[in-house]
Image 1 (tube, rainbow, N blue to C red):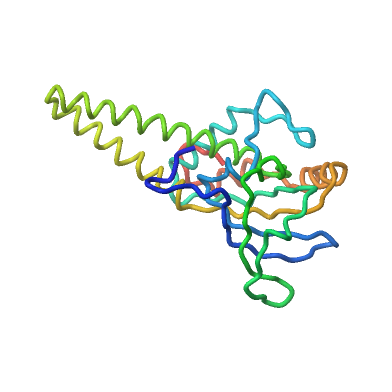
Image 2 (spheres, rainbow, N blue to C red; image 1 turned 30 degrees about the vertical axis):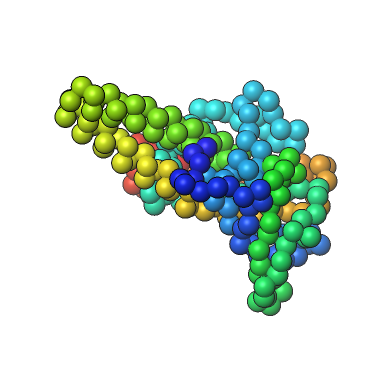
Length: 222
């Protein structure tokens, strides 16, 4: 992922959080910086399936990366992580609204070894792919610009500066945009698998006619 520009990364990541109970399960609703997802969640590997989830298709994750990089106003649903661990000691409440506590959660540095992805593998991998693309493009554009300066090639300089501007904008989006993650605490593996099955079973697909009527993008991706 692209590192935040001119910032030191603290050992723990502090995130805004809501805490509530649902069906006897403690739920933390957190706001995660997209560029920090690799610190918070395990990055899916298409060649190695997670124990309690399906194998991801890299091409589909790359399509999501294309979608996010091309759409500044794109919509993405929340991620659904779960864990057998309890993060209550890392949560500091600052107030409440009804039964919902509001506060800050100190995400430990080893949290991606604690949390699992219940739903959101493709988005998580897609943003990781996007971050790697952006970092690579920034490096190559900087080298191209440096070469153009040495050669006095004004046309190449203009092209490299334009690319740098665009990819720096994408890097800024990674650092500043957030995604909601609804995290279920204390969930054992068998219950996690049941949750995943319930999500997949109850999800209703979208018909081709609805996609054609609603989709304004060219070409259609999601």
